[in-house]
Length: 262
Image 1 (cartoon, rainbow, N blue to C red):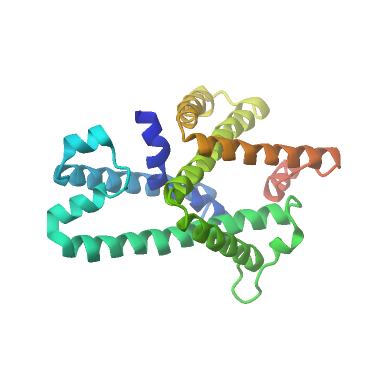
Image 2: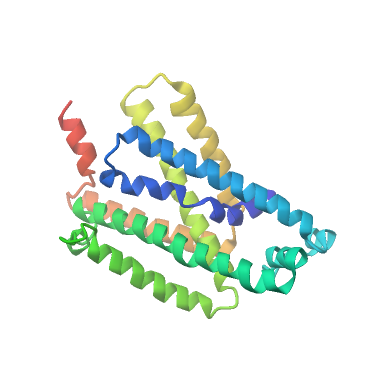
């Protein structure tokens, strides 16, 4: 039950990884990107733990919540109503949630995703029109507009489903955790297999332990999220095979330059 809840609650901690998508636009050394990600994760984790603890103290019917769950997703708002009445629930809490989710999270997600599409298009793994950079604002214009359009259409569709919000959150979480699984595999392959690193703790033990934890969470995720997530992963594998068969082996421009300089 705990790991099933983790597959949903992990949505609260996503976003720190989006910092890595802005690495090429950073003027600092690469190490600063990693530090920023760790700092953002620690800050977000602390804030969510504190606010969850405070909300748990204010829940009107804690035993009933543990027994019956929260099918309507209103437990946090019920705690806000208990703390400050209807005004706090209807105005302050709802407004803060709308700003945080509707603006801040959307901006971060679109910025990160558009730059990922831009990098893939630049490296020949996506259609070339996504690699166009706006000359005035110096941002990937086409990729940003595509992400915004897809997000708008998908958001409106999910909003009209009874289970739309919960399903969308589980799909996002499943996709993120699947990407993190691939990331941990990549760490082992890059450092241990290719570069013969002897830092067994950081480059082997930690990635393997984290991989197993994430794998268990993915296994306990929502069935619909698993079905769609693995189907999307299968599409990606097919595309990768097509690239190899047609002689377009994926290669990262920055990584290739580093390898050539050795």
